[in-house]
Amino acid sequence: MFDVLVYLYETYYRPDACPDSDALVKKLSAAGFEEGEISQALGWLTDLGKTASEFSRRFPTPSATGIRFYAQMEYSILGVEGIGFIQFLESAKLLDAPQREVVIECALTAGEGAISLDKLKVIVLMVLWSQGKEPDGLMFDELFGDNEENAPRLLH
Image 1 (cartoon, one colour):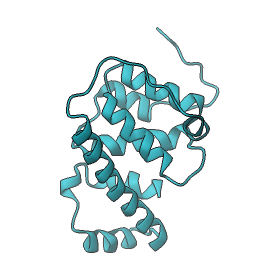
Image 2 (cartoon, one colour):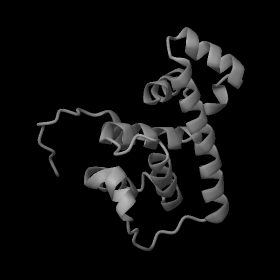
Image 3 (cartoon, one colour):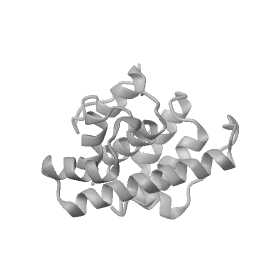
Image 4 (tube, helix red, strand yellow):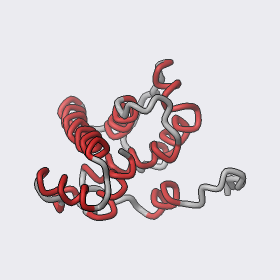
């Protein structure tokens, strides 16, 4: 599923540039993706749209105050590293509170169990993509920067 999502992002930089669903399925099949993978990705994107719409309706003005507490299930799926990444994006003003909630909801419904940081980054990218928002340079560095496991992370 995540390979299809990355392909969609790279091929159709804006969601409104995507063809209708029948044509899109044919194009994804021609690109070599399996039917189950395509179906799962397009279903996930449909759910993403519904979730984003629901959160924007319920929270039209993002709140800049408050603390987000994570439930045990969220911890088990996102992990400490994933939650830290989400908090970093929010503190850097790259995600607002409703976007954070959409990211969390989408990660929980990805059906993957525990989500790796790389997959969480794809989810963040797709949430922004679905809203027509282009990540800035800092976010691109975080999403696609050097992911070497042993590379030390500098704080300055």
